[in-house]
Length: 313
Image (cartoon, rainbow, N blue to C red):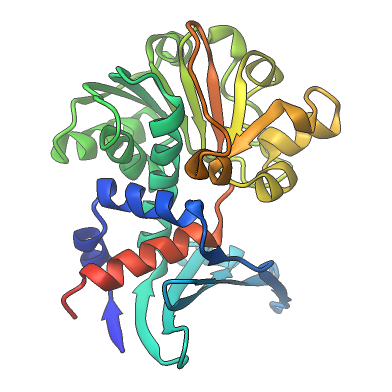
C-alpha cells in the first residue's frame, strides 16, 4: 500500500488536471452514499466527531475519507480537523493507498470551485478577490487561475497581517497578489469574488456587486453560517455543487430557502447538471452568477484516483 503525503499530493494534483478529473467524475459513474456521522464523548470537553465519507466508481476504485473533528485541539496547538483518505481496489478490496486528508480536501475543494467557474464565470475574468486567509485562500486563486486568465488578485481578511501573508504566499506561487483593507470597493472591482471563511454573519453585501460578476462561496458549510447576504441571492443566478448537500447543509442556501427569500427552483443547476450537459449555461450581458460549494465525496474520490494514477509509488 502506498503512502502519499501532503508534499507528494501537491506534486501529483496540479490544479488544471484536477479540475478536469472532478468534471469527469460529475459526468457520472460515481456512487456516493450518505456519510456516516458519530459523536464521540470527550471527558471535560466538547464532543469529538467522526465522519466517514465513502464513494466508489465504475473505474474500479472505492475510497473512504475518515475525518475526526476535535474542537479541543485548538488549545493544544493542533488543527481541529484531522483526516486521512484510503483508496481500495473495488473488486478485491485490496488497500491501494493512504493519503493526507487535509491536502487532498483543500485541493479538491478549490478545484470544484474552479470547475464551476469554467462553466459560469466570464471567459475574460482577470481580477479576483479572495475573502479569507485560511488554508483555502492559498488554493482557490491558483485553481481559478487554471481556468480563467487571472492577472490581479486582492486578498481581504479580518486580520490585515494575515491578508498580507496570504498575498505574499500567492506571489511566491507566481501570482500578482496584494492585500486590501477595503472590502466593498474590492468586491466591486473583482470579476470573481471568492470567499472561504467561517463567518456567522454575511460578509458580502449584494449592493456592492456589479453586473457581469461571478461569486464563489466556499465557507458557510453549516446552516448557522453565512458569507453572502440575501441581496446577493436575489440578484444572482444560483448554482451549487450538489443540490442535495448544499440546499440542506450550507447556510448561504439553507437559510434563505427556509425563510422564503428564494425557492428551490431558484437554484438552477448543480455540477452534475453542468458537467453532464443536462443544463446548458449561457451567460447573458450583465448576469451575476453565484456558486455555492458544500463539498462531496465525489470530489475526494476523483482527487484520490488522479493522485494514485500519477504517483510513482
